[in-house]
Picture (cartoon, rainbow, N blue to C red):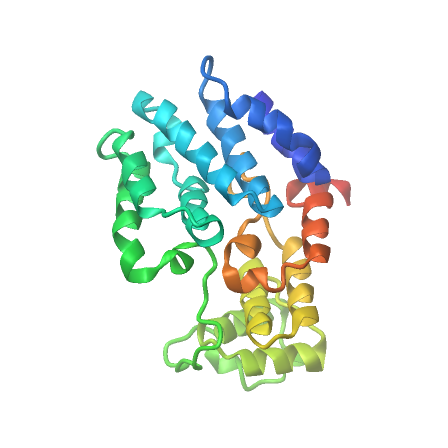
Length: 272
């Protein structure tokens, strides 16, 4: 575990704001090993999302790629959260993403993950819009979809209280896949059972946001906190709740304080 990863782990103990300056300092280094630099930058970008500094997050991502992209190191096989930083700056800081995505791609050797991803996103932006290209977007407010072929659909008409844990998870996944929020809300209201899956908590939160039910949306985002797990050592804090415009409607000060000050992921598990 390098220095950046140690700081990121400490941040996940609930010290995000306290550790942000150290991460920014490492992210700005021009010499030495580059792995800790891009990892620190990635974590710093995520924390900056939560503090509302979308312009700074995008500037950090752009500067890092301009400096280190031509070196062809590990950075060039990443896209998250740097693509998100450029997209979010368009939505939340009025900084157009397409030209920055294209320019950043030019700094990365041909054939590498980041270049392919940024070129694709630059092209898709006009067709899909930045919101759909950000993580955890759902068709909030959209129609219910057919059950045909949906795994777990056969369980939807059974009493949830008679199901085992695996079957219960399948029910939530089927409700999400069919976008059947009415039944999902009814299930939550009748049983008090919250989804075990992070993404489904966010799906529910977005639906509550579209209905103006802030307290219910808060509840789902708070539930999502304990269900999130990093997929890499640099992955400091989940960012969809403050990237997606719909979810931002229920990412209240209470939610932000909870995410920025509570242990999360493996650090929360270790503290139990």
